[in-house]
Image 1 (cartoon, rainbow over the protein chains, first blue to last red):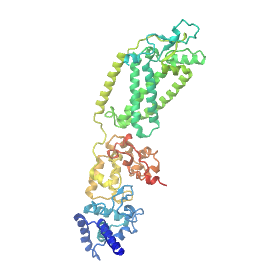
Image 2 (cartoon, rainbow over the protein chains, first blue to last red):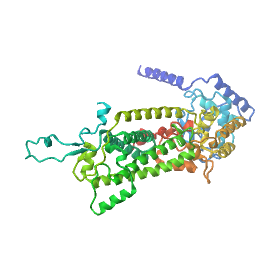
Image 3 (spheres, each protein chain N blue to C red):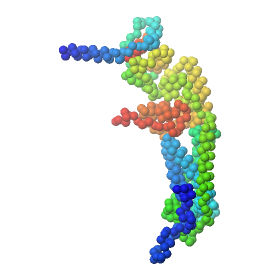
Image 4 (tube, helix red, strand yellow):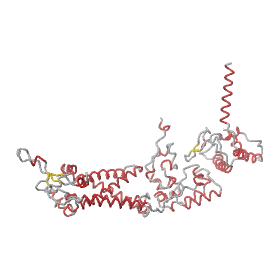
Length: 141
Length: 402
């Protein structure tokens, strides 16, 4: 009896946490992701976006970038539901789409920041596959 | 109290006043207190002590207070100027010893007085002695010069007040130098004045409180003149009205050389994404041109924009650079650093203005570094950087915890 109620509780909690954490991306956000997915499919070896690959990419320390910014987390922080901070000291809105709903809706803006930040962190532009994975990860937060 | 009774010196109707005991001659055994002579009327005494207070506040706030005390300095200075204005009228229409005619300044008489002091044969003046007369003229002159130079600074440097429409930053900056020198001179005069009062002893201080001095037979008096309070009050009222209306009219005139337009929205959005969007008047056009041309490596970060956005921002910066304005910020930031010309915080003007701000203040989480102008300057976005708008945030509770 005890056990059954615990399981019910656990399932309930999981449902609640899933409900808040995994917000359904808006049409605009899906459109931005789909754009990268379409381009990535023309690159070799891409079968579809992976949030897990995106998470690893986001948290990885990359070589080739600038000393101050070896990882995305250098500025965005490790808790993506909290604000990050630019090198100049200004707050960056949280990356999690569920926290900052206005993010990832304008393809030009998303591309602008991928272009700048990939150069700073990796020393090169990101591939469409990397962008699709990262976006899939951030949209799922 | 009517103005007539307020301005009448004690014992005005009897030049030589005395305490009641002195007049009851029925008991000659009682020692006769020395008769007192009315010297400083209530208006002169009120003026004196109010001037002490206002000049004291203006000197302290001008020489030592942080810039956020600007308005206290400004208003104490205005109050001192109004007091001196009233005193000038009273010097023409007041009672005997308030009148300038009773203490005409003369260097030769002052030197003679000094010589008499040296020979220990100092004559006793009921009003100002010749040295005191020079001092009064010097003090009034100093406050007058400080008023004029102060208004020039307010107009030329702060771009505020009645002279703002007519005064360049260069004139204001020159006036500021003069204002500072005259302020130090005034502080020196105040010290000399106090030393002179101490030399004359407690009678002098008492007279500036009670208004009377012991008459004595050897004292040098001045020919009696009646006070004319009603013309004096009328003159002061007209002068104040003219000054208030004139200041309001002149202050309302459009001021050339100050930024009035808000920041370009694209500039504010793109540059404000990473740091305070600096007002374009804080750097010269050639600095902005170089910054925009090098956005792909902007102080180590890639801040590149589309070609169209880059051009729009470049044009707007060029049209609003430091050369286009005459504010203090534009003037002080117009000359970039020789060694690091693109870095606004390396500009000699910036470094001089922030020399007193410790590194720890910039490091505060509530400030957010040297680029966070608006953390301390509430009006940074407008390019005005007024002293009264400066407020350094306290350390946040997190950083204060050990």
